[in-house]
Image (cartoon, rainbow, N blue to C red):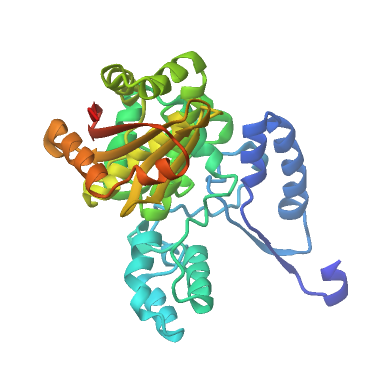
Length: 398
């Protein structure tokens, strides 16, 4: 129709061509979607006399997918190719210019930590959507914190599927990635969604091509050193790991209730035994480059997830009480029992010392005051210290 009106051949731009394929693969109608897109693209890009040329973008390479049967005039550039690599996102120079234009130079370091780190060809790139959103937020609120703008996208289903189906070896590799290390993997850039379930290792390739991992080095042929590019993607992995663990723990409600009741009953020894069993199953989130407080947050989050399954308990996190903010405060109104838990990271397995420091902090800052104000008559105080997949739990005597 455009050609008929203007008598000029048309350029067709198709963005994220493979998103319908991804959704179809995740929801069980992949073959039907392939048939539909094949007929659509054949008419638009193969047998269209009104076409000047077409440009498609997507996460998967298009040369091997059966939706392009019969099309032999495709030029494909992937994220590993040098050609056009500077156009996949924003370079650091472009981000600096953008932030200077809006008077936001002081936020450049934060933007780099959160949204930089992608490697396309030989170029290091920022995610343009995230940088634009971050600048927009800062213009309207100078105190705005960076956000994981990918967190609510459907693409995170891939991360969720990967974590839920990971083998013990893969879980260990995820832990290495979350600690800031890299892993060596063969990446198949000719992969299609149809082939994804053929081999669980294909998920590594999918995570690379969809931007959840990037490469820090090319070792040989298609063997890459993979790493998490930035804080935004790390947060997405962390969120999905917590969601997976919560679902895992909920599968056995009896054991979960037994664990929670050990705290209600004052049985620190049994609580420690069961918590160590859970830590042995979970994918640990330990960044070796962050301060101790952030390492403690992982174990804090795991405990909160476990306690949250007790419907008749009021579980509070970081609530102001006494002279500070306690890690976890639990109210059991039916029994008038209050529980205060302080979590410490037992660096180099100094678990006993960590527990004693936690209990001392509970006393020094009077964390029990909130529970007393809420009418709890029995107060139980616990120090919890964790290191890697080990924990120590000590209950205060008084």
